[in-house]
Amino acid sequence: MYAVIEAGGKQYMVHKGSRIKVEKLELNPGETIEFKPLLVRREDGSIDTEKGKVIAEVLSHGKHKKLIVFKFRAKKNYKRWRGHRQPYTEILIKDIVEV
Image 1 (cartoon, rainbow, N blue to C red):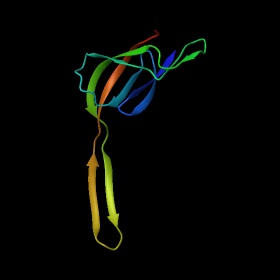
Image 2 (image 1 turned 30 degrees about the horizontal axis):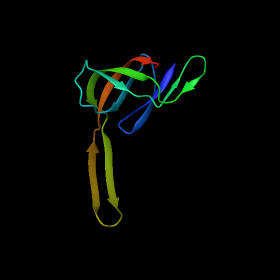
Image 3 (image 1 turned 45 degrees about the vertical axis):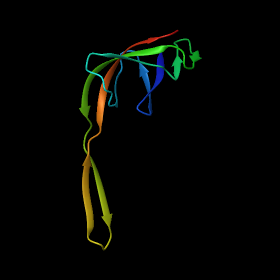
């Protein structure tokens, strides 16, 4: 069984026991959070939309690898190097509950 959830404006396909990195959530490690799934697919192949809930536990917070943002204008002696590290929250999917 899997579900599709939305977190931080992005959609993730999750299974029970999967670990994913989502946009930073203002929760402490060890707390639980519930997501309302956009889609749930059971083992028999049937699909429900927006029924049930996905229970997840916050594992940790961190930052992704650095991305380099480089701006350049030809023949103008213009170069700008900037780095960016996006914060994330790692969560563990505990259960997918059908209602």
